[in-house]
Image (cartoon, rainbow, N blue to C red; front, side, top):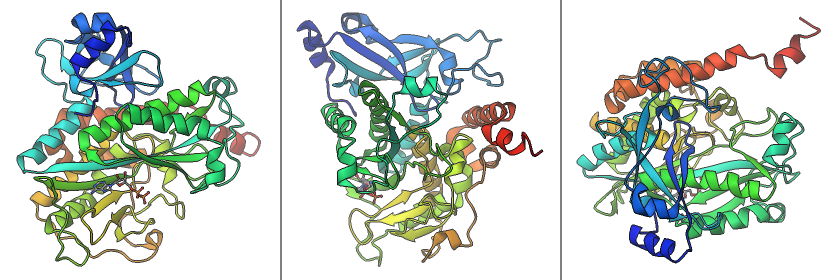
Length: 453
Ligand code: ADP
């Protein structure tokens, strides 16, 4: 339901010549928009029903490689087609591109038209159906942090991503003067997203040179994931239009803080916040306590979905505002799970584990699966941690992608919630990242060992 344009409105706009291009997109495993640009007249005449794409789009990596080892598709299976079925409730203008609208697609089997279980939208929808059966809606918000750079993507690629110069030269946390220097990107970003039906709350400078944060108002989880994906895409495109580059890599320099994507979560019933109990000291209902206990108990199981690459794990550094331990606490930014809005109807839990590289559909689905399991098990919540959570004694968030992959593979909870095939598919994706990284020689190894080894 996240779109703003009805199919009837679109037909009128196409007839009047206002719209000539429709981007027909799926969301890939990495949380990116992939698809085709349709002539709008062809889209409204027939392509609105369905189009097709190569099924490797849900078995590839950031670089569009075709690694072996996926059960869903392979060279042997001939890399056939999926059906891309436009979800017309997601139709919206893309105001930063002339005459252009977009639609998100569900990904279906070419023959049976059943939803492809490892497609990110399908994975989230499955958890939302479980919640619906329990009578709950999930209201979520994701924060997007990223860095802006002086040069363009093309220039930086040609120079091997060296000498990266963030736009603002000083820490710009909440800084109005420094962020004014970035308004040529951020103002059109806020306004274009708003006009695309994405409820932007604000942007602000973050705690590094050139680091910005975009906040979007909380919404039903599927809408939030759509908003996140489109907003991230828009950030890259608008920066590109202005001759700038932007990165969502969680840690692009060892000397800089990382970029995160915190996920705010609350469950609602019949339009009322089911996490709120005015009788409780902190305003937390018993339901919320069990949900949060589930998030804590299963944190290692789902960390992969919050930190899917080798680089994601470089963010988890002491004293960096990124968490290191599986701890919950009240309005405490050193904890992995921070209680926000305590004592009010806005009481919610913020998971601070995810990096700016999350696929929001997968991240939210995994968090919901853990929270639902906590409710089903009627888990008791331990008392909140007080103080510096970096000094806490609770378990550590998995240190590496290898550890997180092992926890994912061994997770009975996620296997039951998402299905064995889905877990094995993403465990293979994690393994591909590890294999690729192990193959290359890094700058660090050369600098460390060239002369001294
Ligand atoms: P922070 O202090 O972490 O930067 P913000 O005050 O910027 O937090 O708000 C974070 C997000 O929480 C916003 O996107 C907001 O829409 C969202 N939010 C507010 N209330 C709820 C709620 N009940 N459930 C989920 N998200 C919520």
